[in-house]
Image 1 (cartoon, one colour):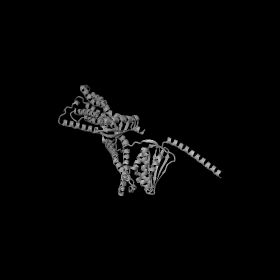
Image 2: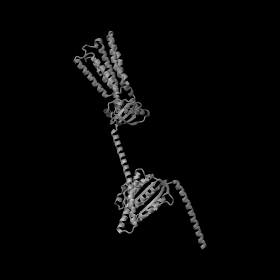
Image 3: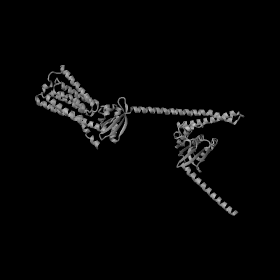
Image 4: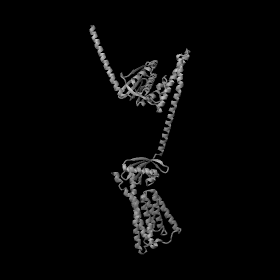
Length: 567
């Protein structure tokens, strides 16, 4: 309510500022004509009618162009009209020493009614040029030396003075309150504002502006502020929508002939005014565009790198398979015995070849996942079966390293819907990683548990462990803990990143808990449980258990009877 009452008189003040001067001028003309007729009633003729028409032209032009007075071209035409009439009227007596000199302020009063300081300064300069020009012309004898119009109408001096005073008084009365209200409006809205803030009415007229806004532009209309047709159209539509919806609006508009992007924020003050904030974001948008371009280039380079690694992995597998095959033949002595040293070399070649094949396989899988070419082939299977099989396959490796490997799974089937190959890869990578970094005499435990529709797969070891900082990096490609780098075991940093990626492809979560020197626990929470099959399997398991229990009870009864018979 306070805001509305504060700006309630602005519409009336705008009308008074724009039209008080021409209306008072037109109303004052009959007064002038009456005074002139009283002074010399017999001389009223065509000359007086000509003067009246000439005096009315600038006022009529001012009123006619009233709806366009916020446009620069309309202001310029009105100023030219008032200045031309003032120049003719002042020059007509042949010298400057007449009351008609007061008419020199007409262009200044008209400019002040537009509400822009730039127009006032322009009108003042124009008036000064006119007065100086007439003074020079009078001293050089270029003006008529007669008294001109005063010969025919002696009362013209008095009438001109009265009309000039009426116009000046009306103009100042209309302009000063509005200037004062604009100052109060600026102080209330934009006190200490460091931004380009403007108060604009429904028709796009600038009612007030912040200090920074007035320094940036002295335009009195939205079109003058933006100086861009497309920006003006978009801004007017947005302002109309703000008045209709009573909701703030923000949009990016081009400003100026160069079309620099500015953020335009609009907020409604009352039913007739909006607060507009302009901010130049062209540099910000250019920076954002550059960052987007750099991001796209980086993504493209990453894809090209991934495709290169994938193709190279395929190319490397062929010679590696040949190396492994021939080293296997040498180890098996298929073509006869070989010296012991050569046999040792064959073992090393075979071991290195297997390591390179595993590395190439990991690189290929990671490349596929990064390039979004890795597709899951989901099917139904028992997770316990996969877990037991993988632990059994890695048992020999664990025994060679002197590590004890155990498994803890439910004593019933755990049906899941997942990619069987991916689950094997996850288990092999986790078990291989645990065996690598668990010293001899250590223990590795593989656990499976259920929580709702989630299956938790947990691999726990009591190996070298890692710090919290290293644990936070685990799962990122080519990242290894410091404890792993200090170990004799070879690693690439791809194993766990592949496990994390495969888990995330199953919409799962990868978690690492570790303490340096105390071991590591890696758990995967995978929402892959086939609950429908799980219920059937549970019922089937319960039925089997009931049969077993009944059989055991029957056996105990038979044993008891047999014991009694024997006794």
